[in-house]
Amino acid sequence: MAKDMGLKSSELKREIFYFVSAALAAGIILELLWPNIILAYFNLNILFALWLVSALVAVWKR
Amino acid sequence: MTMLKVFWTKLSFLSRLRLFFGAFLCLMILVFLYLKVVPFGHITYTKTWPAGLRSGKGFIYDFKPAERLATGTAALRVIADPVYFSLFTPRRFDQVQVTVKYRERLGTTTPIIELGVLQDKIAGSYELRPLQNDIVDALRFSWPRLDDSAERLVLQQEREYSSLADFDADLAAGHLRGCPSGPAACVAVYDYSLPEEYRVPDYVRLSPLTIDQPLRGSHQFYVYFPSGPWRLKFSFTDLNQDRAADPVTVNVYRDGQLAATQAFADANPDPTGGQTETKDLTLTGQAASGGVYKVEVRISDDVVIARLESSSEKLAFINKIWPVSGAGVLTLFTDAAYLQATAFDPANLGSISFGGQAFALDTPYRQFTWQAGPGVKEIKLAKDDIVLSNSGVFAFSRAGLFNPAPARIDRFFAPGGDTRYVMAAYERPLLEAGRKTARASFNISGADRDKGKYTFLISVPGLDGTAPENYLDIEEIQVELSGRTLWQKIWD
Image 1 (cartoon, chains in turn yellow, orange):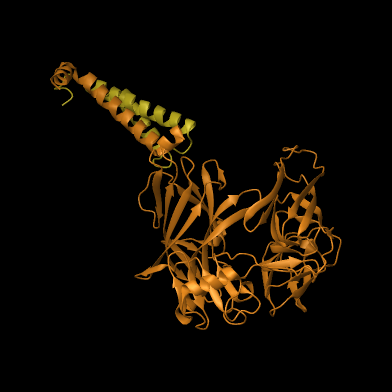
Image 2: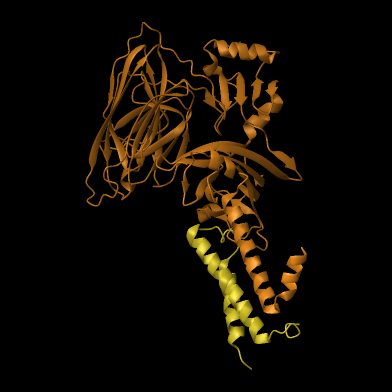
C-alpha cells in the first residue's frame, strides 16, 4: 500500500523508527519531569524494545 | 472544511503519515498530562488480585514486609500484622475513600481489621479506620440498638432509653442512666470520641511533678490542670544516632482545640559526629477552669524526652511509653487489662512483673502480649529500653494515673463489666457470595506524602503468622481520591 502511495518500504520503516524514537524521547522527558507519570500506566521498557526492533528493521538490508 | 480537504489532498503520503504520527504523539502527551494534573480533582485507582495483564507499575504497590504475606495465592494473603503499602498519586489530594474487597479466615482472637494512613512520618503515627470489628458486629445483634445510622451506632446493654434524643441530652449533660460514675466509665467506644468530662474536685491540691526518667520517641499524655496558670517544661536530647533531621513539636489540646504549641527545627540536620544535643522547651497557659489537656510530643526515635516538668502531678501517658535510661528497676502503673512489650536490645530481655505476675520477655524485636485482671496494675521492669503499649494509660505513680477517655473496643474487649453503652462510627462490611466489602475514608490534606507516595497499612491486631489457617485474603483495593480542581488551584 505504501508503494501505491509513492512511499518506499525503507522510507516507511524509517518513519516508524522516527515516530517510536520521538515517543520514547517524549516518555523519558515526561518521566524525568514528573516521575511515575508514564511508568504508572505503561512500562517504557516495552517502548524501548519497540524502538530497538524498529531501528534494526530500518537498517536491515536483504 | 473544504480548505482542510484541499490541504489534506495536496499533502504527499509521507507528509500525511508524519502528520498522523505527530498528532498521535501530541494526543498521548496530552492524555498523560491530563492524568498528571487531574483537572477535575477526582480520580480512581484500582488494584486487583490476581493481577491479570498489566504493563504499568500501577498506583497501589510495594506491599511489605514480604514475610507477613503468603506467596502462591491468587489473592494478596496477609498472614501477620501489619502490612504496609504505597499509594502513588500524581498530585496532592484532600480526601481518599478506600474500598477493600476481601475474604477472611480469622479466629476469635483477631476480630478486628483496620486500615491506616501515615499522617506524621517523624512520629510514625497512622490514622486508623475500621474495616471490620466482629465484637461490635456481635453486639449490634445482641444489644438493643438506639441508633444505627451512617454516622454512628449506639447500643445499650439494657433498655434504659427508648428515645435517642433523651440519650443525647443526657450524654451532653454528662449523666447517663445506669452510669453513676459518668459516661466515660460505662461507655465503650470504637472510632468515636466523647467529650472529656474528667474533673478533680477543687479541694484536692495537685503538686508539681518532675519525671527524670528519659522517654524515647513520640509520646502523648493527659495532664489535668486546675484553674489558674499551668506550665510544662521539656528537656530533649537529640541522640544523633541517624543522619536525619530531628525536629521537635509539642502540641497541647483542650477539648480537641489547640491550646498551645511550640516547635523547633533541627539546627544540625545532618549530624556526623554522633554527639548528643540538648534542647529545652517550655509551654505555659492559663486555665479558666480545671480540665484535661492532651499533650502530643512529636519527635523521632532519635530524640529522648530527658526530663519533663509539669505543674500538675495528674499526668498519664496514652497507649504507649518507652522508658530508656539503663538505670535499672522501674515501676509504672496502668489501667488496661493487658500489656504489650517489645525489647530491641537483647541486653534488655528478662522478666517483667505485670499485675503481680511475672512474664518472660525473652526474644528481641517480638511484641509480647500478657493479660491480667481489671483495675489499676503495677508494672515492674528490671531493665528499661522496652516499648510498653496497651489501650489504656501509663503513669509513674498510682496517684498520677487517670484516664478521662472511655474504654475502646479493641481485641481484648469483653462485653459486660462496667460497659452499659457502645458508641461507634462504624459500618459493618457488606457480605456478598463469601466476599466482604468495607470502606474507610481519610482526610489526607495533611498526610505524609513522600516522593508522591502516601503510605497505608492494613492491620489485623493479633495476627502473628503463627497459625497458617488464619489469614486475610485481599482481592481488590480501590482508592477514590478527591481534591481541588485545576480552576480552584488557579483562581483561589
